[in-house]
Amino acid sequence: MKTFRLVFCFFFVGVLSSCLDLEENIVINEDNSGVYSVSFDLGKMIGMSKQMGSGNGENKELEKKDSTIYLKDLIQNSDSLTAAEKELYKDGYINIKLDEANEQMKIAMTCPFRSINNLKEIKENFMKVLDKLKAFEKLTGKQKEAVAEESDSEMASKVMSPGSVDNAVFTAEPGKITNTFFNTEDYKKEIKSDSLMVAMQTLSAIMGEMTYKTTITTPVPIKNYAGNNAMLSDNKKTISFKNTLTEMMEHPEKLSYKVEY
Image (cartoon, rainbow, N blue to C red; front, top):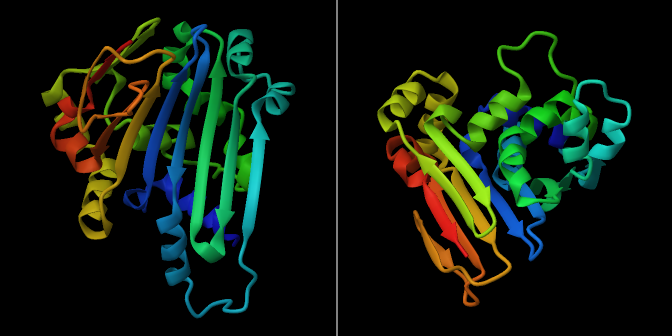
């Protein structure tokens, strides 16, 4: 089995989710257009997959890829999206860079937006749209199982945003972006009953923390901000917030942030 297919399989099943780092990027332009992207660094998984396959295929050729899937090509022949969804996501794309010899692998999912008012919908539904388009199957060649308890998008969404959307509200408008977390007790109960999230936390204790980072770049200097482990750039136009999986599960209030510019 191809290495990057194996890694993708592990990722979406969630078995080795603690071995990746996730970064969410939001870039706002002067006209309130921008770009939303989520990237996964799965380099650690490459090393683990090599160890798991040690002794087998020692002389096999190591893979090196740089592949991109453009959503507009998938949307043209799709009847699974509404007209509004097609218009909103038509400029999106997924890129995968793999260098097995150097144990490097990064997956980036990107979607430009014409108005900041579209950012909330893109952030909350991007994975669902990719699943409807079978984008990851096209990118990896991995066919989805005929019967599965959860879809790829549902699993990936859990990795990206543990807990229910009922526990947080994301807002985006000119001059202000917020992520407000509430219902912490309900969140903790939900997490403890989710087998995937429990497994991820257990693996984190063994193989290292999964990290989540949100970076926001604004067209003018940021006036006010609040959030966990905040780091502001020298020009005050880029702010980053960072959490670990353990922090997110045990102290969900740390997911909240606010940026005013």
